Image (cartoon, rainbow, N blue to C red; front, side, top):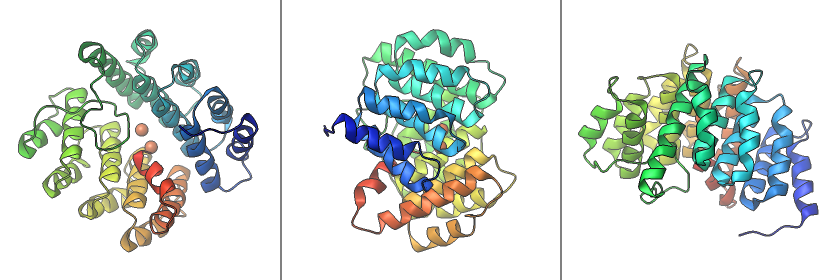
Length: 301
Ligand SMILES: [Fe+2]
Ligand SMILES: [Fe+2]
């Protein structure tokens, strides 16, 4: 555990909440607050939900979920309930409630599990399944996860790539089962698993596809670059998916990724453009001695 004084946290919070600062500095401030944890850090993060950057706001919610602190629940509920918040931000708030996994969140998730924004509805359904699963399985969800992330679904027992791939793309399976297969494939870390995930970037809902891209970012395997590139380049693709592809390329961080990202750094969609900026910053860090930042970022966007 890292210790910081209240004043230090306040100073970091000022960087996070200053719209005049470059976005990459604000992201670094956010990751520092996430790692420090505690109520003061949570308070600084809460303030930033009135910001204009959807990318930054969705990351605030994500970080609150990963902090696994029940004190963040009321903040996340407020964001989920606020229909003026963008779908990507509300989605991340619901996912974070699932990540924290308090049984008290069941009612609010039930309320929004049929939300008219499909990404929000699906996320609430997943979060509900996760909380029920945790209740039955005494929180064993992270036992096989080689990454430090709290995932929206636990892996399955299955280890066979073909079998997992079938579940992953099966439109008749529940989203929760498909997510479980996705995380099992990720944990296998093989080229075949990466190829199976890459192929799935073209199937399922936008929520599903964005999660596939996220998982490919965690894997940091160069075999996924052509898939990620194709979805980032596809302007008809949902911006939440394109954003996640950009950040996955930033996590892989080789020369080709840098080249691809540079060509979308002025994309018309703000969230894609900002993702490329942050992803290029990740590339720079991944290739520098300051590894801590890159590792924190690749845990999840
Ligand atoms: Fe997400
Ligand atoms: Fe994201």
